[in-house]
Image 1 (spheres, rainbow, N blue to C red):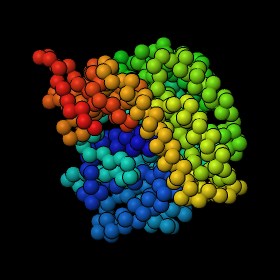
Image 2 (cartoon, rainbow, N blue to C red):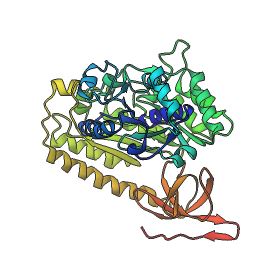
Image 3 (cartoon, rainbow, N blue to C red):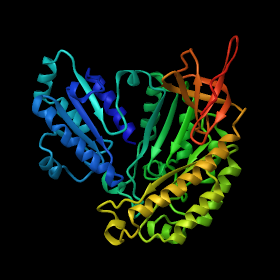
Image 4 (spheres, one colour):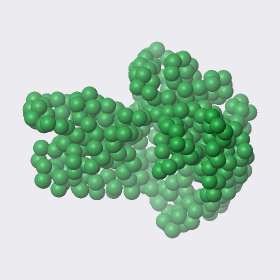
Length: 438
């Protein structure tokens, strides 16, 4: 979601004739996009804000904007007092205050005097050098903002607000515009993306939206995330199975493999229900890959309860597991009412056990691709190798002297590992083989 917000602000800045630069020190406008889903992320954001003091001291005319979840939705008075060198604070997914600041009379006068105007993004994960802005292949499209579910560990509802679906036509128009600029793949985003449209006056649904997006000429691939076990319907499964542009990769987190822990998390399903959901997804979507999220060390999680989580992953053999060590977030129900009983070293032990298990499982799953012919959409280049993804979201590397950016190519998988694959690319005069060493 933060990547999508950053892209949107970058486009707005380019509309004001700013150009991106990768160095904050060279920028006239600096945007710091923040995440606070874990304490370490919030600490990093605060550290980066403080690091901008020297730039502001040396260049008072530089405009600093802090946006994202650190700002939240409840006002900025405390942040303004804590960080007086920041010019403007923007709530998540709302660049309005920042754009208003840049177009006010004093700022416009400064813009007119500048011979060139440059902006830089800082968020720990995303920078926007010029090449990336001009050659994007995939784009994230927020369709559901905020969340009203309020799992006990989650800070998102308190920072991004209640659940709000974007109007259908706004989503479709944005995607059409991006496709006209060369985008080949979109990922529709929501904290619970399956709930899309339920809050709109004219009721609609995610399957209905996906059908409309599927009809956009020039768009080649569609993905969506993140799903919730309680809202992933058979209609949605059948939509994925029936629409060729919809990729057979599902992200449906279960967070824990023990019913009591799930109850404490306010997830509102049982592990038996999750097992049956995964079975139905696999039955209805041929060749599907499935990703999940798991939190280890949730308050009160016993060794037995952790073992239950381990066993669920061992039995289900999912393609991807995103693992997090529980981190108390001030303001959440868990931080107010539950004692963080699991020591940090024990959280790390549990983290590594699942990491090792998933490495083995992913290696076994990916090995089945060896020698297979698959389609890959190429997104960019790492040194001398092109990188892209299969329909099931497997990362593939290919060596080629040709420009493959934005191309969907049929390749043969020649090497597999747990986290990526390598492949050969057919050429006009034969097949180009690549180094198959890991």
